[in-house]
Each structure stands twice: as C-alpha cells, then as structure tokens.
Image 1 (cartoon, helix red, strand yellow):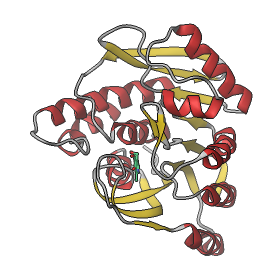
Image 2 (tube, protein in one colour):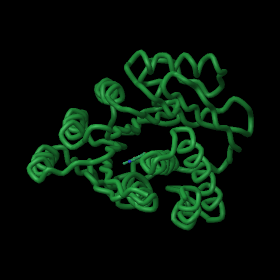
Image 3 (tube, helix red, strand yellow):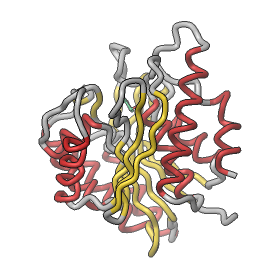
Length: 276
Ligand code: PXL
C-alpha cells in the first residue's frame, strides 16, 4: 500500500465529535499521513450547544500557506469541511493550488447546512462562495439541504428520483464534477447515497436507522475520503463510508444521552477491516 499525505481543512470543535476530532482519527485509521489546517476553534459545535466560543483562524491561513510553499510541502489530497468564514474560501482554493501536485484530489464537503437550514453563522454570501469551491473540487459530498442551497432548489423531505436528478443536473451546471449525494431516501425505512461520477449514476441503499445522530456527515465524508485516497473506487468508498456510518449509529444507540455526536471510535476497527 502506498503511503499518502492528505491535508484536511475544517474546524476544531473541542467537544462534540465532529470536524477534526472525527477526520483526523478516521484518516489515520485509513493509513494516511494526515496534516490539518484548523479553520476555526470552537468550544463545542453549534448544533445543540449554546454560548460556544468561536475563534476564526482566517488570518492565519496565508502565512501557513506561505510557510508550506517555502518548505516545498505537497499533498496528494486536500479535503475541506466546515470553514470559518467566506474569505477563507479563496484562501482554501489558493492552498490547494499551491500544495496540490498533479493528480492530487480536491474533495469538498460543503458542511454548512442540514434539515433545511444553514448552520448558525452562515449566510447567502457564504453559499455563493461555496458554489465556487464546489466547482473547483474533484468530488463534493453534499446532503440534500446543502445541495438545495447550492442549486436554489426547494428543500423537500419527500421527493422522487426526478427531484434528485434535477438537483444533480443543477450541481453539474455549477461546474461540480463528481458528486457523492448523501442521505437520499426513495423508500421508507431505507436511505442511501447517489454516486455521480464521470457522468454515470449509481445508488447504494441501506437501512435507515431512526436514531441518526449529529456528526455522521463528518464521519461519512472522512471515511469516504480515506477509502478514496487509499485507492478504492468512488462507489466502493461511498459504500464503505455508508456501512461504517451505520456501525457508528448502532454503537451510539447503545448509549444514554449521547446526543451531540456519534460513537465512531469503538468501531474504528471495523472501518480498518472494510478498507483492507
Ligand atoms: O458536523 C458539521 C459541523 C462542523 N463544525 C461545526 C458545526 C457543525 C454542525 O453543526 O457546528 C462547528
């Protein structure tokens, strides 16, 4: 197995099992050397806690980039999640251009919204900037809410294949190349992921677990990226990420009062098995 180096850019939520506290262990478990660039530091994530602190690290990004360029540091993949400001989006593009090599993957999780709403702190200007980041990426991983914000489509909780196809078409009109469209359910009790790659569609369906918890989007994206960069096809990576996320949700269901994140750590061994 070749040993690859990846950079992930997302926030540190000190408590709450999301973003970097999820991405770093999962990418490491996938056997990747993982570099991080924190976009912001928060005392907790913003979904369910109140009064959290938020330190925006936008101003640190240009000098970090300059140092890496001076050192000749390159990454075989750059994966972005929750970003701390609209201005950061231009810096992130520049960091990919400066530190990516020929053949490096650029993977964007437009982590900005869920259940029909933007996360606190994001606005229309951020969404406009995120469209341009998604257009630059090799792969994006939106959920339905994020895809609706990106395309201007109405958010629906009940829909058919035509609705999903129209969103996908509008995402490709924006310039998105390959789309891993998560949380797509065509049947009660089931959910799945649409893998749109090189103009072809595939769908992986699995059971819908009613206790779906916060942070699973980051678990899904990190395990997808880990598998993809390890050399799996996009479909196989999407399937591994779905199966692993289901294991994490089942593990979390064993716990009382664990509302803020998913217990992904006790089942990391299963991800490693799926990847080998
Ligand atoms: O899981 C996405 C996420 C990441 N980072 C922060 C968040 C959220 C979702 O609410 O608040 C800070």
